[in-house]
Length: 271
Image 1: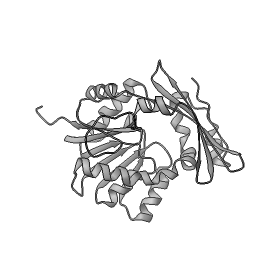
Image 2: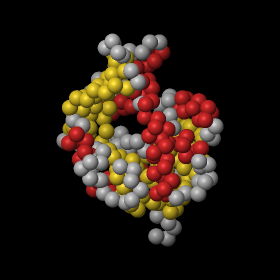
Image 3: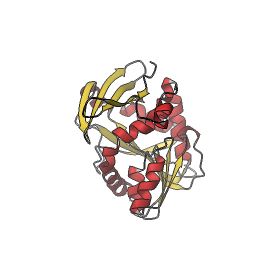
Image 4: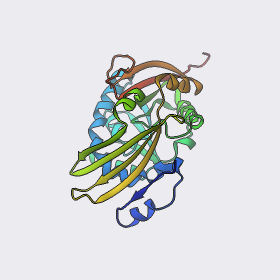
C-alpha cells in the first residue's frame, strides 16, 4: 500500500512534507505531524520513568540509551533523576527536546540519526525502545535493530520494549476514531493487513473550523507476544520478564491491556 501523506502547514514545513517518500519510509514525514498531534502525551513520560525505575532498579548515574526517543518525553524524566541519557531519533523534533531539556535543567544528549545504522560500544546499562519504537521495518530489519541496540548495552544490561498489545488493538482500535486534543480534532482511520501483520493508520488533525492542518500515514508491525519473544531471542537477547499496562508486577497482557512491556538482557560473558 502506498502511503498517502499530505500536510498543509505553511512555509518550509509544507515543502518538506510534499516530497515523495516511499511507503515503507513514511516516518520521515512525521516531524511536523508529531508536533501537532503528539505533544499532549507529555504526561506519559513520568509514568514510563516511574515504571522503569521500579523494574530495572538502576542506580543514579546509570547510562541509558533511548532509541526512537521523539522529543525525549521519557529521557528527560530519567535525566532529571540523575541518569546519563542518550536519546536517538530520526526526526527534527529532537531540537524541541533539547529546548525542553534546557528549560527543565535536564542534562541529556539528543542525537538525530537512524536506528538502523546505530552503532555504539557496549557502554549502556539499559536501552529503551519505548512508545511503539519497535516495529517500523520488515521483520528482518526489526531484528537487526534489536541486535544493534542490544550490542550497545553492557553484558547483563537491559533492553526494554514498550509495545502495542496486538489483541487489544484488533478488538478495540480498527475503524474510525475521533478525539479532541488541545482544541484540535484528531481523526484516525485504522485497518489491519493480515498478510503482513501490520496496523495501518491514516491520521488527520484539523482545527476547530474543520480545516485540515496535517494528514499522516502510519504503518506498524504488530507482533504477537510469541512473535516478539522470538524476535528478541533471534537478536541474541534473553527474555527476563513480561509486564502489562506499566504494572510493576510481571504478568502477560490481558484483554484490557492496550500496551505491554518486555524486559530482556544481554547475555553475560561465558554464557
